[in-house]
Image 1 (cartoon, rainbow, N blue to C red):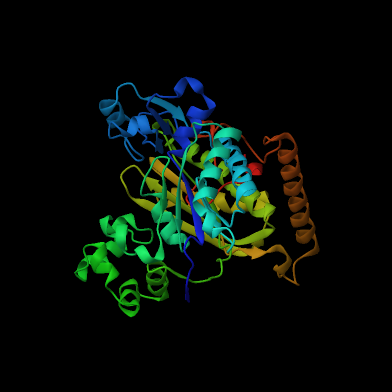
Image 2 (cartoon, helix red, strand yellow; image 1 turned 120 degrees about the vertical axis):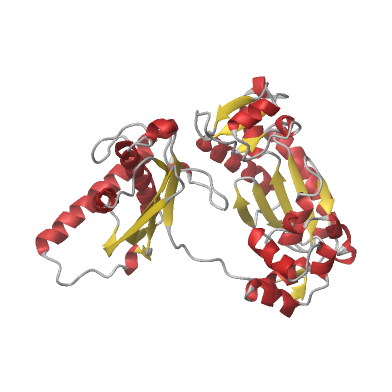
Length: 415
């Protein structure tokens, strides 16, 4: 652990990205309050709101009905994840031409590490990034940039003066402007950690800053507390990235999709999407889990474990088995959300096949694997699922899988 140099990290956070992306693509929406929703139904909530909508108190998570009450002129648009991912790649290319991108933190957040000879000109580099984005992409997509000794502090700085801000936090200035923040404004302090701090009598950043590293470790319950304390105090720690653990997709269903038959149809589409992602990254799975949340709030979950598989035929057979169990146990009902997850992930080259596997069974499995590889190649070539197993219908909102999630950006091949 060492103190990082001033401005060793440059963090870019795009302002109201999904909503701004729609305004960028559709000039008629510029200057108007815009709310991005996952599907066309009055029972959903916003996943993004433009700055114009935020002035009326509309924000991410606001129900559609409430958004209309607060802002009658708001324009709702269906999320277009493929458009946002393509735009994201254009943005990354622009940033990378100015400063090499160290880490893509989310669809709208990017972290850059500055070299020793770049740190003195960090503010100028930040202004250059803003200028180049406006010139090469357009002025509608604004970003806020933070400069600090490490990524955590740079991220905090990027949030301090939104939209279109530029804030620098130096080591010598700490805790400085951090004292004006709420505890939950600091990345790493969610509701659970905030509750732990509250129980320990820590109610503000000043009290948090005064804690020792061992004290924070005790509150966090492990070494994550040590890392958090170090980053907050301007230190830099190198740590390894975690390995891939699972692939999954989920979907909230509109009222007309909450029947058992349509729930099953949606789950099949989600599973095939997850299988395609898994194969592209050269993995197989040994477990498939299914989670169904009913509109009453109750949840049914089950898992199927067995030999490693990578073909759609096996995956869909196992999904069918899980749905049979769900029907027998009355776990489906009016399903509000369906979630499929591939787990027990192993690299394809590490699969240990059963030496006693019947020759006919092995040949059958290999045929299904070749068919799955062929469908992937056709999908990649034609940018559409031209070949599927079984019935292929529409999905809720005419969209299944390949959603942008926190910390995960779908590949263009997912669409």
